[in-house]
Amino acid sequence: MDVSPDTDFSSRHVISIVLGGGAGTRLFPLTKDRAKPAVPLAGKYRLVDIPISNCINSKLQRIFVLTQYQSSSLHRHIHASYRFDNFTNGFVEIMAAEQTQGDESWYQGTADAVRQNMQHFSSHPYEVVLILCGDQLYRANYQKLIMQHFQSGADVTVGTVPVQAEACHAFGIMEIDSDRKITRFVEKPKDPAVLETLKVEEPIRSTIKTEHPGDVFLASMGVYVFNRKALDESLENKDLTDFGKHIIPDMIKTHNVYSYVFQGYWEDIGTIRAFYDANLDLAAPVPKFNFFDAEAPIYSRARYLPASKVQRSDVDRAIIADGCIILESKLERCIVGVRSRIGEGTSIKDTVIMGLDYFETDAARAEAAERGEPRMGIGHNCSIESAIIDKNVRIGDNVKISPADKPKDMDGDNFYIRDGIVCIPKGAVLKDGTVI
Image 1 (cartoon, rainbow, N blue to C red):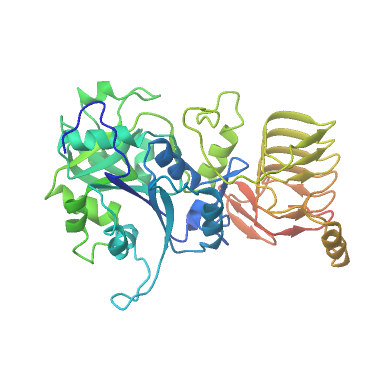
Image 2: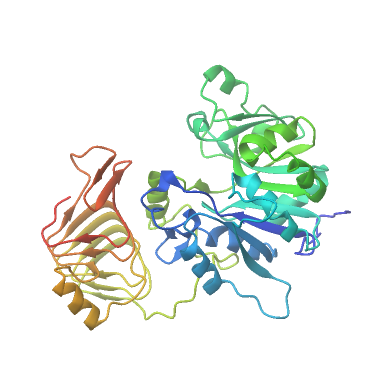
């Protein structure tokens, strides 16, 4: 199609596909009972809200979310959050893995997930397909990505971010020419000699803004724009099941595959450490990611909760979501999720608290007491640091939680330590006086 700098790519040109991901083992135990995109973020959001909000803000309102693993909470969240009116053609549609007469297997990878749903996508008019991951934190205007895709004459455009050499082992790294056409793809390079050949050379290096001077490498974001015909061709070989590992390296040899260099904050929240650091950074005076951007808001479920109540507490660098009750406590660098309850005399530092799915009734509290369990939330005179407290946890009085003097990774009774962070799993019960 003909494009100009003011071309507005609307939903009639584009369908967007958000990949729900697999088991998310690197985010365990947060993914023990939920899909990776359903993991709570910043006190009141879910990870999947990021790509969906980016699409809506980019005027792309035909969105499919492909799910498979532990997807019930993700389905509930999407159904409760994203409903377009009858006067638009917009939708957020869940495509759960299904067995058919032609294929009884579940999704074998990102490309296979798209392949198995092509019959559903093909019932909609579109020229290009935007494919996104459901577990990254960034704000992007996809119109710019699609504009470059058409202007360059690409069959496929891969979203990339500049990274330093020490981060390359965790990503697929692209080599590009002076026109930003991708000439080589290396998955998670570790050999320094190979890495040296992949660095971005001048004059392109001078056009890429980074926080650090020196060599720059281009890592795949897991964001792709495919022409309709190119996507059909790439999926013909059923042995190629993953975009990053199979499809993109294969298409570099036969198609015009270009790099779109994303300039801005981007974080792959694929590990406990990355998730923890990205959340706590939001409590900084000037966070790297801005949830307060009025021009490109992040959308989520409307819960209609009361405002939070804080009584005689010392709070420093904290985000407190709706519906919380915090009584005579000390909070330092914390994320406090919806409906959280924190008792008197409790001190919490460097901790992500995901909150509760519902307010506990008096009858439910009485039943818990009969079972010898504390009420939902965090009790009195507790000390918690360097932790992630998942949803619906019951923490009694005088509980101490800290990773100090413990292995970097270990499994315990009602807790896990990953990357030096104590993780209390969803629904866990820690009785009075528990020490972790």
